[in-house]
Figure (cartoon, rainbow over the protein chains, first blue to last red):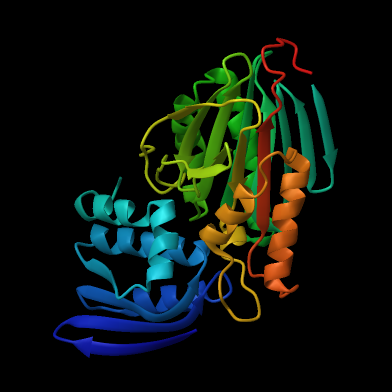
Length: 103
Length: 241
């Protein structure tokens, strides 16, 4: 997995390429936690595979950022990955966390 | 009731049902599981699930969730209540470890042949009836992601002799061959459709052998777990077969 970091108007954009799984999930988690910006955007356009550890980490980071009054935005999700995330209820959870990060 | 457990395989013959399942781990031990759980003389549960992660931690969490599931069934066997309670107690354990688990719970009544399904973030089951394959519509959020379980509720089917139900984990539909193309739901539906008239264990073997043909033995990233249940037509006997 490769992470490219860009900054844009108070926002950090993390472009993730390759495969995100239990073996490298901490790398992306640390990068998200390191960012001081109010909005952290995760661009998944180059992501080929995500396992449950990757999905779980993204949700727990979203929860942490919302609790701090910040935002984790996940964008440009490839269709096959969107379908996998849909099954576990990923987007429903993100939506709920936005209004209630302690849900 | 006849129940045969061999390694990663389990075969059930009771309640006017044949059930056959197996779990094939990829690399180190993963979090996939399945089980047939007898409830009373007319009701049996079938469950399939996947705990996030790999290795010892996932295996330990999986054992905890399975134990809690049996407890939840004992306390109140209504399928939706089982999942709600399991999300409360099991979800707490999962969250402590920063994990979650997907689960699909089926409850079959051998007298009425009613199948009730509740889903927590898992691929919904496939139903084979009269040579046609239908994907169940039950959906829900995986266990441990939210404090309270959120889902579409209980979906019910009344099965006829010869009807079959297929449960599987994501490792099956996401399995890749050398071309990096996925096995996919459409291919799974097609091979299930061709199994009309085949018994549960043979159906399971045929699906796994089609998967093997597709992957050409290419090593997989995730465990593959598959459970097939088939109505034998001998339902209505209170003591099963």
